[in-house]
Length: 441
Ligand SMILES: [Zn+2]
Image 1 (cartoon, protein in one colour):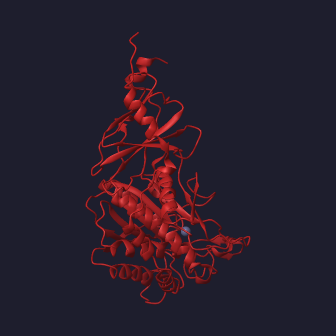
Image 2 (image 1 turned 90 degrees about the horizontal axis):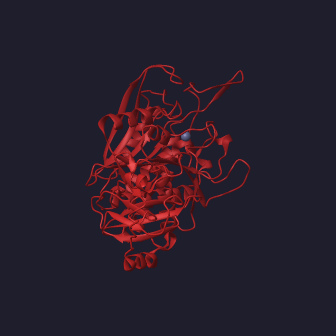
């Protein structure tokens, strides 16, 4: 048997550089601080007052009226976003939909989509659903198809809609040139079964759009829960299984950046796609393989959801602004950073045991614009990335004497201004790799 002597100097340097990840940034960019601070509770209030003033935004409440229903509501969202900046390309994204499920008649459904072009085509979405519903109880039955009763939907999901509008404004007016193309969407017919988001994500798949992240905001403005407990300093972020799905890496990224840009406003990560028995538009994207998460307030009040009581008075605009700032910090960072590195070789992660047979040897494809990379890892029975090393501008790295069986590994790309990408994890068991076969089983 041939004995391999590790490069002692390299090994020593690596161990010295390994630190808890929490002690390694992320670097604060003063330009992002400015964007975050530009979010205005007063503007959020102004948009939401108008939106909830249309009485209902039920997806079937189309009309020629200018003061009632979904028609003037979508027109208002479109025109308001158009007024923010010439850089924002704002359009309706419409579909003819046949009767199905909760959609009782043929209808034209329109998402409102604002695109802020970046240097590249890769897309990052921020969304809320602007449609509403109020279940009218007739003879003890819920009826989701009634479109003529009051459904102001201030919190569900006027809050996510105006958050999306305000994040669009601060990004478009920031003067920053982003690498990613930012897309701000008010989705329609979420209440009829994620219809607007499903149609849009299907189009994305057909067109081959690269969507790196979806920040879906749904019910993000209420601080007083149904039990009377008030929580204005935390927000939940739901992400789909498994533990190292791209959606969950996005969730970790959001918490990591909220901790530096919004200290005092805690992001609670929930290792679930959504709440029990409930759904949201991020799921339409997850089903097509796109990473996406859902923001929702920590303390919900069910008596003010899907009811005529979901009014402006139930929304805390300081809290809503904080949630908008959490979105803005992460969206700006992800859009300024290089894309996450590709760590897959064909269909397996590029992870092996190295020449020694006892190392963690990993490689990745260079990310456009990256000037260095940070390798991260954690014990396999742990949700948070624990350790990291900035390994410089290389596309392979070996950690000696660390068993790939006992840890989960990942790598992030870092740009010239210190902006980090989302982590790409080496997730699938590398059973088919030749270097594993050589070691035996
Ligand atoms: Zn909703």
